[in-house]
Image 1 (cartoon, rainbow, N blue to C red):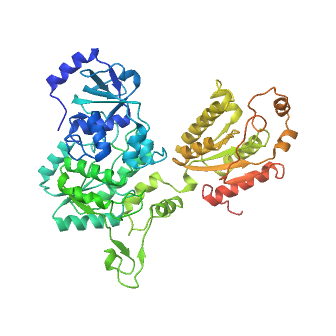
Image 2: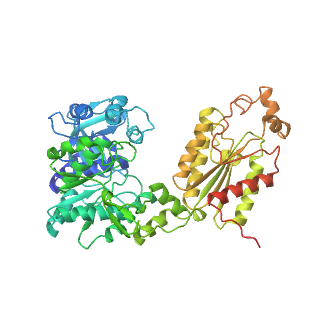
Image 3: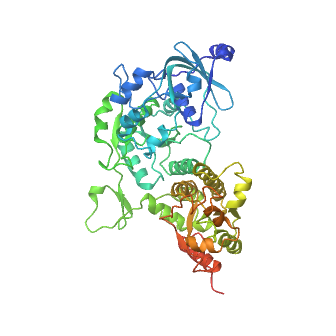
Length: 551
């Protein structure tokens, strides 16, 4: 179901599109449109209307009864929805305004977010990974037939973003009649390769490695994963494996995710699909058992993923059920892989090819070469700024990284001058500090932050932003309130107690002490230098600083 129109029709649509309302697609929507336009979502001819949407949510079937596990919808703002009605045409444009497609509107409606969350994930908890993705949508949904003028222009992996038709044509050119598709493990490893090669040889098939790349601006994680998969592909036997990428985020739901993956892979010309267990779900080790009953309806053979294990005495991979008694089975979990990379240790050749290790090391260098953030929190007058300034000097002496001090008062002056001290404004200020710290950390620098940051939720949000790109240490300067008041040179506490300052932390506004601080110091008992010593010792233990050798 290729929805790309001929050039004469595209020219006609461009000419008439100036009178249509427009929707500027974000990266998530661009990924969906790309697969819809090129036939990755066959048999769909556009975005689902309300009837198909509700049927898919409730029964994993279109209103016609055809199997389809996941809603494919276009979300728009209420302002755009107000301009639409049945028979309207909506111009779908990329963020720069390029016309990509015309949507012939059949339906406009307001979905129930809770009902969809429950149908797809069995929960309404917004912390669920798939729920978080869904909740980024706008409030209104639009359904209708799509005429696509061109594919979105992706800045990354351009040669690997092949359409289903292009992939099928490549299979025909190579004479590949049976193809096993899989979403590679992260990171790709030898056990997965041994499994796939074994199945391919038994089935007389070839292999399509098809990582799902979350749509968005190019990022280090996506590039590292695709480069690692490409390196792993090169270690397969000659002419055994091909590689393409999909602009989709995983659904994080066992059965629907597996059915959706298999349906898309069938549209790419694959005859077999590897079924893997959802890492976020307990249960059957080779995926949701119910998926296998749908294989005939999809028209694809489903292959349970049961990788072999490495036996040290044999220096070889064997099937899990064939391990000789008394043998030593070696494994590395995903967390153990990351820990070894963090310590600067090479991954063993039995686990991953050297080229794969090299790519993973680029993304996950040893901790002593990574950026990190030291984030102070504590009451006004607790000594945060004093310790932070001395830590800045120590880091300049101890590390070759760039070091930036993000002082709370200075950042309020230059980054958040329009903000007051209400709780929402404090949270915005801390979020901005966290964003800057994460950018410094991502680029290999050291960020030292010294705001009050009174609320636990805000501090955890900053932790999440920074830990996604590097190291994070929370330092709680736990100097008691009475000591902070005693040393208050600016007279702020006295003015707050007199009612002259509103929303003052510790007096008229709460301070939520952290539970998970990496370092706790009290400047009523410790000197600033002793507090810095504790922080440095912690950073050495965590591996972000190499221990200083005795002279």
